[in-house]
Image (cartoon, helix red, strand yellow):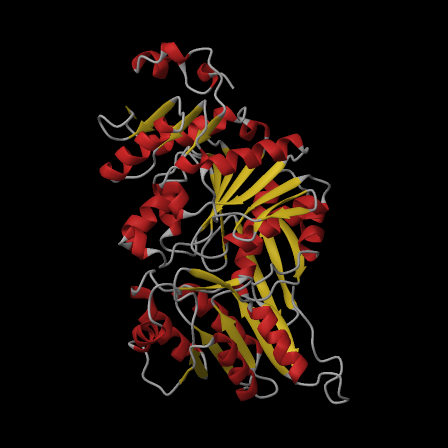
Length: 490
């Protein structure tokens, strides 16, 4: 692509870049390892010395231009991250403008809500792409995604490929990090969804006010044309005070445009009556728990606004199965085993409260907290686990560069009752399955569908589903008393 199709004329003239007009740009890069002749390097670091070293390296490798936030380091600009995002959109022919894009943000529920929306649309004949925690998928193919919301170069290349493959709608997760780091700058979202704002990522945002402010900043005409917001979440509904776009609300306990009544829960699914902007429909879904009623309401709101009629909204939702790693149920020897990604205080509480409604037996939980992340949530999660579960086992969950015993000690600051500690996650799960009795529900929280365990600087192969399956095999499931006792929820 030629230089002037990437940057507008005002930017070119203001920075005396006319000499680059007509030159072909081979690549926009944010990593010096990707530089070749004809590249433009965007230095995204906030460290002056690193920026100087990286820009010098970029020029030595043949970069046509290096751009940073620092004076005397390549070309200085006011906000290199925003410029990078908008330049990537231009480099990939602003393919994002040819797609109807829905962005889902919130502490919990992003992955399931994007899944619900995409599945309803696909059931109604739409070509849909998904971007998020579980990867990139469209046209029956799935690819790994480096981040929940990837950097702008990956993101716009994905939009470009999706458009060329005939995709009409893109449903994507929008993380708070992505909003703060301007990865989504220049994208015109048709609809933005806000599920909730509860504690997470305070290692990065430092305070809940900063985290909330970042989430809410997505709900302006700079980013979206209209919004769908959960009004039962105290922090989320603050968006109604300042947003300059139309907002559709959903909830269960507060007045809302879209709401649910008469919910009934079981280990196989949920039924409820939904009123979606005065359209009343009976819903039966394979999704389990009241938090999935919220996710379903969000999905119904979005799909109605995208033109799906009432009958097909209900029908589409009835065919939506749980996302891998989100309240997936198996049964071993009469014991229910649930694998869930819950890794924040609110997420853990919701899963345990849901389990409590589904059995009159014990609810047990095995979980840990990630290393080198928000330490302040650890004691809270210990307290929540103790309050809502009958028995708790603490284990590893991506300890990274921290010692397992230090993470466990932080969790135990919120606990007063006896509990088990087994830092080997495989052993912890096996012990808790053996400990649980028929009719009990065991929640295995924190990792969901993740295929690795981060220990030190390594990503070691590991998966909770594989561990549970090994336990299932060892339980001799095809003995007469156990035959047919195992089933998966994903």
